[in-house]
Length: 364
Image (cartoon, rainbow, N blue to C red; front, side, top):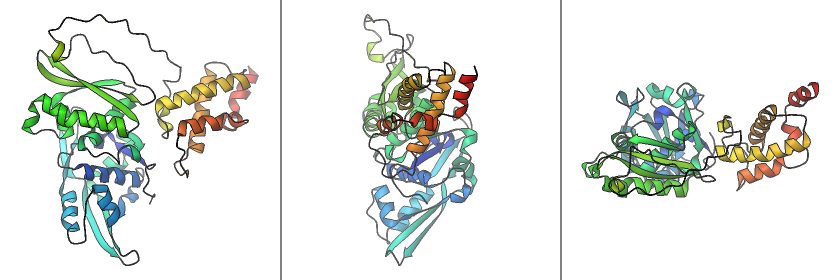
């Protein structure tokens, strides 16, 4: 069982990303995050996960003893989640995520051990993630979140970012369903914004690796959707609203003059699959690739475009897996900077450059 650290990797299926956790507290959602970080999502035999009573209390922000632990575990096991069966969520199946818990006294540690196991009917949701797609991120980005909506919104946005999006719109009803904000008081968008959306966006931007902003989308004066804008902290995108959907507060105001948006420059590395370098964000991987490309042009001028970019991608991918291994201890404070420094050393490029690139260039 992997040690519980912020560097643990969470791999969450899209079914779990878009499931409805209406009755789950923020603490219970954090416990789910830790559970996901402790299993091997490609090995169903790893489904049983154990915690000490002290860890359990810390994760859920609880003050428990052996007498009241039973009722808390019962509440966690009794919660039901709605897993979507189609893209728009109109069809779903409801399950308890976890169907078994054991609480045993450990005489060696003089503490209680709590073990939980996922519902066998939901094993594909936890362990067959390659088929339906998934998001992955470090546990440290969600374990410190105190808002239920923050945790749910974060994985939702990471799913959008996996599709190379920098903004996305979501219908108001679907958003409220997803965040569990179905109380009648949230029919007033001002209450939803003040009590749910703004605190979640602020917490995500402060605690995680991404920054998020949003604006309401209206038809007339009725709020019908919300558009989120997001990006990794190293690069925040600027997105304009569609001309036929405008903010309610400015619908009747005079249009302001706008400068023509400058076309975003690309590096040529945006089309590569950087999810293989899970220790870094996509933008950080691209920044590393730019540095490696400069060194490649100096040391291997015979390798020309587009072959050079493929070689750079393979170098960064291999170096990231080696230098920023998930088991690395201690973990560098600035992973991107550390990786760049390592690749700038003499001989680093040759160490990670597959030989066939240079051979192929020489033959031509």
